[in-house]
Amino acid sequence: MAVRAVRGAVQLERDEAGHMSEQVGDLLTAVLERNGLDADDLISIWFTATPDLHSDFPAAAARRIGVDIGDVPLICAQELDIEGAMPRVVRLLAHVETDLPKSRIAHVYLGAAAALRKDIAQ
Image (cartoon, rainbow, N blue to C red; front, top):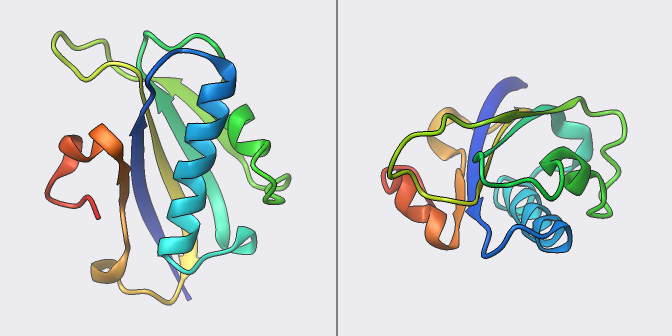
């Protein structure tokens, strides 16, 4: 079993806690499903949010999705405030245990966030 990193992102339509919960939940669920993972495979998850998001912590939103990740360390940080960057984006970097080779990891960029990494978005 190897340790792998899985990336993902989603752009929120608005800065509202309920909407963030829904979108972060969709992102984390997609990361798990597309990589054949479950909560026991998660080692840790880093979340970042652009500086224009203030309504909730992405990690708090992730804990509400119905998957038992209570023992998975989660942390949030703020993205750099770069002029012209895509607004209202939550990104994640999940460290997981999996038998998948690096080349088979499915990085998940939902909706408009797919434009951030066209080279790895699936």
